[in-house]
Amino acid sequence: MSQSTTDPRAFRAPPRRPLRLSWSDERVRGIVWQVLVVGLLGAVVWWLWSNTVHNLEVRRIATGFGFLRREAGLPIAESLIEYNPTDTYLRALTVGLLNTLKVAVVGIVLATLIGTLVGIARLSRNWLLARLAAIYVEVIRDLPLLLQLLFWYAILQGLPGPRQAMQPVAGIFLSNRGLKMPWVEWQDAHSFALLAFVLGAVGTWLYRRAALQKQMQDGQPRRLWPVALGAMVALPLAVWAAFGAPWTIDWPELRGFNFRGGMTISPEYFALLLGLTLYTAGFIAEIVRAGILAVPQGQWEAAQALGLHPGQVLNRIVLPQALRVIIPPMTSQYLNITKNSSLAVAIGYQDIVSIANTTLNQTGQAIEGIAIIMLVYLTISLSISLFMNWYNARIALVER
Image (cartoon, rainbow, N blue to C red; front, top):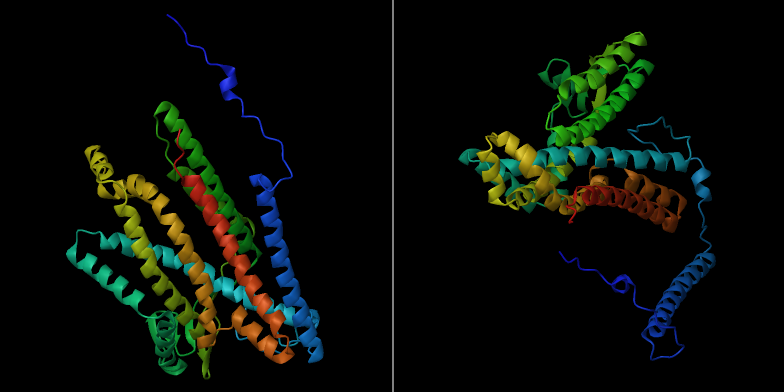
């Protein structure tokens, strides 16, 4: 049998032509045009900067970020870290940043869960369930977000006072002061138990990956639930017990004209989170529905022919393929929910925009204040984009 040989010269790169300092050389023209464009942009930026500095000096307006070290004197209703008006503007802006992240992170998680469920419900064979999901999507997407925020805030403000608070469940009170619910008095044992749970979740994920690789080799499935139960339940409980097993619940109680104790979810945060979550979930539902419909019908039929029930078909066959269609537009919705949180100023929730606006009104340094807001949202948006792009590249099909 004759064997064909391949000429090794076929794999060699073509020789590069030497660069000629002539306008007829396209590489020289490309370099010249790039230098001119960069120089023009630099000149425009320099002119804008010098003109701004000159105008500020003429009007005797202070510049710089030295005001961040001054006392703020700014009251903030709710914060994730300790804060009082005698703290600096820097700490006040940090509180605003954390308040923004609290809305964005929780809103992304809740909107993803609700949107996924509604998107799947729209494809349900149950006529009533599919119609209700369709009505939700069409109504919620056609109403302006700001109008929805004001609607939910007006409803929460219209609730009765603490003395006539609604009590849907024992220990939980809903009034115009917000939502009050029991909360565990957090101690070091709870922090270590939470850390153990996170480490257990990571270990379970690593074990699942290894088990799937071994299953691909020998065809033998490995049970995941014993490892998950031990790593994510038994281990945190053991760590919690090792540090004394503290368990003291702080129950809300009506004292005078308001509640004391427990955890409080303010009406402003509740309305903002509710409006953002429900609004964004409507768009995510359509993205999920489109991703599922993009999976060929033959995949469904092949999975059903193997004897898989509908839940297994959706979880193991359809959704992993649909993710490749869902992730890119889902990234845009995550960015939208983060940027739309700036509407919090309309209902009195003190996020980074609200606190920065108050800061620039007190100090008169509007350029620095706007720059801080832009930098915060740019950093958050780029972080979300980088993570989602990494995940999208990870689940992408690799062609051979």
